[in-house]
Image (tube, rainbow, N blue to C red; front, side, top):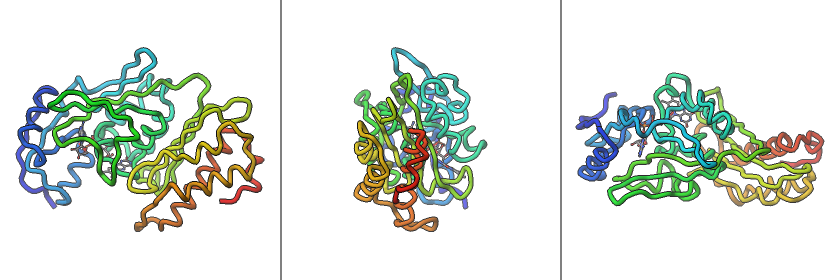
Length: 293
Ligand SMILES: Cc1cc2nc3c(=O)[nH]c(=O)nc-3n(C[C@H](O)[C@H](O)[C@H](O)COP(=O)(O)OP(=O)(O)OC[C@H]3O[C@@H](n4cnc5c(N)ncnc54)[C@H](O)[C@@H]3O)c2cc1C
């Protein structure tokens, strides 16, 4: 199938893009890498009347580090994130996660901003933003808004971005010395969307979690920063404590059913991931016996 007819303009600056979005309102769509937008248009799942191509806006591309903050431009491609020294050093979880996004051809065009604005609940990068405590920066006709990632994702393919706003950048605190991470997803094949995934970050001191952030994806209509993590922080983790934390996930996750998995299967896989994550981050294979998921 081919997309329905649409008008097209290539923005020459952020201000120009905002003018175009303001003029065309809800009938317009931003085009970044096109890896989600164009398939959706070709399948006629959406038919925007006006496309604002921001692909030439070099000011929205790149990674910088200043005063403990890593800033990533919205147009930074997945392939650039994978190659970036700054990402490898200051956000190693993100680097590991990006390797699971689709395939090289898609990573060569797809962008961080596009992935976040698209807000697929099975995507890796939105969950990483929750885990890493990201601030998402949006610019619109009224100026700039800074949104905590926890307030950005509002539903399946829904965010708190207004139709006239552009996602321009993401800020992440650089990884503190001594923090570790865990990333794993269950997928049918490498590069497929996850059936369930977990992006976690931890500060482990004297064999205990001083801090633990658990970003689950493909477990509901949006990524989830699981409060169950609190049950594992500042305590001696025993099989009973871990079992309780896994059970607590039942309250927090609301997985959807689709052709890949039932809701019950997704709940089970999320608990398996949590148990594996804790074993791995604490280096405690002894916990395995006695944990019930
Ligand atoms: C075969 C295949 C497999 C895939 N597998 C995965 C996967 O495993 N994991 C995964 O996460 N994704 C996957 N994807 C989806 C894709 O990789 C990402 O969604 C993509 O990278 C989005 O970035 P983009 O720049 O291409 O966005 P686009 O397609 O250009 O845009 C996506 C949406 O975001 C909006 N948008 C884009 N940029 C902005 C901005 N700066 N401000 C405001 N709105 C904006 C657009 O209007 C559109 O609605 C897959 C895609 C394909 C085709």
